[in-house]
Image 1 (cartoon, rainbow, N blue to C red):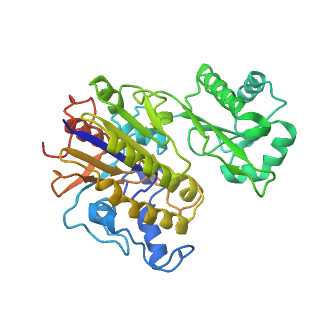
Image 2 (cartoon, helix red, strand yellow):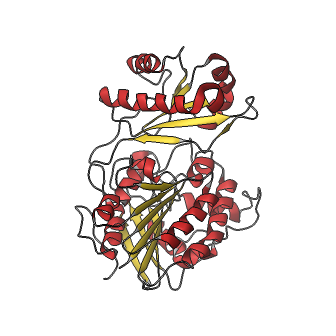
Image 3 (cartoon, rainbow, N blue to C red):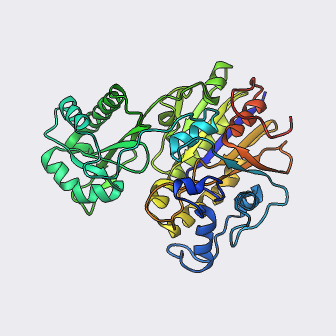
Length: 405
């Protein structure tokens, strides 16, 4: 019986989305623009020279980029024996939840609720109920902001007054930041659970409430900790994760997968402080996986640390570090295994603003029995159905397998 593995390089888009203009993202291309910055010597902080991704290129990331947007990014090459496609999203959002749900076979039929980019950003009734539920002296923020920036700006006041920092972004999200010791981690989690319940009660279809704990003594030393926790809306229908469990297999989440799916279909989850630690945990999960099991990993730092912060050099360093680790995972694949390496959206670090970008994504397939091939443009849900077919599961409601049986 087969095993399946899905690695999501969070935000590593490859341009070319046909509806990008509707999102204000026409011309965005995360991978190509990072590669351009590297090739032209503008991304040499902590690294140097053209972008170097030999292992991802061997798997077809250059080929997939060419399918998506018409050209292989500067410095990258095509994979002679690669099995690849470019993935295209049909859901209305360009956020993490929307992308992951669709990759798992559950596209969204309607969009999320987004908070306006005004100050205040939140409805007064929502803020009043949150203050009452948490017994708070008030809140700080109430605006669109970068998490690291707003913690540096308001963190000291938050610690001094006991008022948590509540903010949002262009995503459908409500984020609450508070000091782990001064405010209390469990108290922050309880407040976020209250916020989730209040949003649902008010009929505000917000994708995620995110607890953002931080530590440190002053603004210069404040750091967000790995104890982030997401409170997500459950998927609208069973996903590949549920289908694996229903068939008697194990779905093992790595990183924030369990949070993204609100625990639905992901009874086991492993977390670590950063992507390199998560990669090690993912390799361990591959070693431990049995017949019929599915390991689903998210590597978030591409997005959180470099895309949103518009840091092409940092993004390039992280791509190269991830690429260097890939042989560890590939060496663990056994006959009958299928690994797919994808992304969930784009986050072009050369683009305007700090938001995700609507892009196609790479879909790279690996395993001892995988045959080389260019599969053109596929839908996100086709990823789920390809993995489901590989695991011998009955077809789902959306998408179709693109690999020959």
